[in-house]
Length: 321
Image (cartoon, rainbow, N blue to C red; front, top):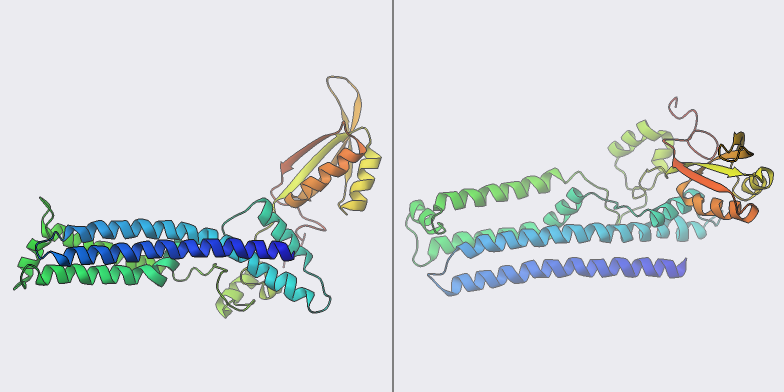
């Protein structure tokens, strides 16, 4: 676990550096465009439009990288709170549910935050300021070069790009910036990112109230960064001639219930036992290994189950609570 913890930290650090790299690209290109434009009084102001599109491309790349960073950071934070912290206090062991959740995440990695949240966070943290500097430089260019503008009409004329009138270019710029501001505001309530240094139980009272409506009082003790996502539940059909020995080892090693049905091979006409066993996605490998150890000729069919109610899975009384 110590080596795994270090590996996840290393992954998170690599993607954190990549975030800084794309931000540096945006800053350097913006500085270069501003210097190039103001160095020539008669230089084209259209380079600001090109740079705006280029920064937007960098923003989309950085948002994608931020989602990868959050994938590794969420694992690191989960190990810090639910493994290492739990090992320091009684009963000196990690939560088994946490271990299953981490194993599920390793087998089926999923991004912990949406693309919109990642885009909004990077936009508010860095890119709004870059866009603001670029907008101020653009309007300053229109106002003072090649000479100081004496009216709005003159500034609008200077904003034209080839056959495209200046008012169209300015309208595009204003609309684009309004969309950026709306995006940053509308994504503000999205708070699923786990890479922040925040307390383990960081839910606001409003969020806790909503979680309790769904999951009862246990939701109050749910770590804010652990996603309330059910592990994938599966139904395994085991066709074997060693039903008793297979059932015994599954009951002993996996502590999973097994139900036996009688089947018949229609090709050979021979009777076979069919064992039914509900498992989670993290238990499939162990189940196959146990079956193989008892009957190498067995068939194991694994199919998804919408939901499994009973001991070891969802409560039969969950909806009533």
